[in-house]
Image 1 (cartoon, helix red, strand yellow):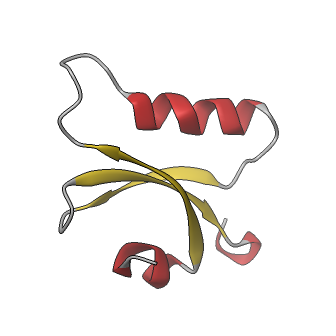
Image 2 (image 1 turned 180 degrees about the vertical axis):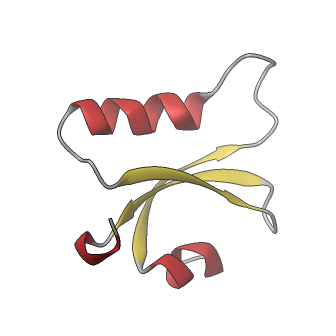
Length: 63
């Protein structure tokens, strides 16, 4: 688990490289699909060490 996820007490579901083509936001799109499916705790955070966007499910107490 990365430091970001550990600090948030969440679970990393997917990771996307920060170098996506201009105008493409795969992490945000993935999180939006999860939210539409009823997972309201899905959020995107940036992991600066790995230069990646992480889709994280926060623990229920953090919402």
